[in-house]
Image 1 (cartoon, helix red, strand yellow):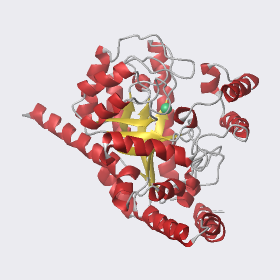
Image 2: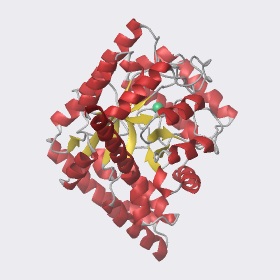
Image 3: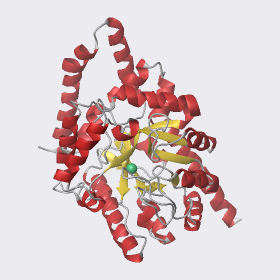
Length: 422
Ligand SMILES: [Zn+2]
């Protein structure tokens, strides 16, 4: 079966699914039907943009073909089926030692992810194109294609070499997070499920300052998701361009260092930036202790209870891990779309409609009840419509804000480059 057949079959299935299943299931009254029709029209009209889609290194090989239906939460048929128009595909590298060997290894792993994203564009360029500017996004979307962009998760893979940043920029990286779950050469991390690491720099390091200046100069968005609050506040101060949180939930709902506080939200908004609220169950709400114990037991049984083992896990192991954890949801329900949109509502209340966006973290632990893959993307729009957001507001939340920030970051870069040549 050709990709075209596969993809067009996906579309037919979507239409059949909408007509046969979704409409009768969701519409128990005329007003529900009207709301759903309205949401469908809006979902068609606006550009939906997800700022965080993780991929395995063997993405777009014979092992994982994004043009077919895969076990992943995002592949091209799922994007078409759910109307997810665009997304930042992530060059993620896990944290290792801050040594030359560690940097060299991380660099190789990052290159493997860039290669994977390139393979997707090469194989399926008629379906999805790589955007390096907001104007590219507009042009690709206007041509009816899906849009891929690239975000770098964990600047660790740059090592201490500013030349690597130039290379990553050339390959399309347009946002970069300063840390992941460990402290990096650039700054202190908020940490992970096992708590926060001891601060190494007291926030942003001197190298972090230098690299932020270079990001501003090139036009790479500074991303503070996963950073310690100290790092976030210092990065906001250091950056001459708007700052983003590419995938973060809010402390108001779950008080863990990984989540964004009200103070950080306000500071990000003041830069003109955006907080992309993430559909990640464990960040959105606290699990009961019994569920956490059951999850820990699953990790133990699958020998995935160390960071090294997690990073070395195969896609099949990830899929099995997800399946087992999902089975626990029957006893202890995970966050749903309404709870996710509660956080969007709160973010809008605190920062205003111009500073809020959406991220899934699919492939990296994201997924909630009702938005557990690109194919279910419409459910988010439906919930936004049910909350009373109009089309212009939904367009902002679903990508318009992020694209505005990106344009502003490009403008600052152009100005800084012009200043140098004066
Ligand atoms: Zn992440």
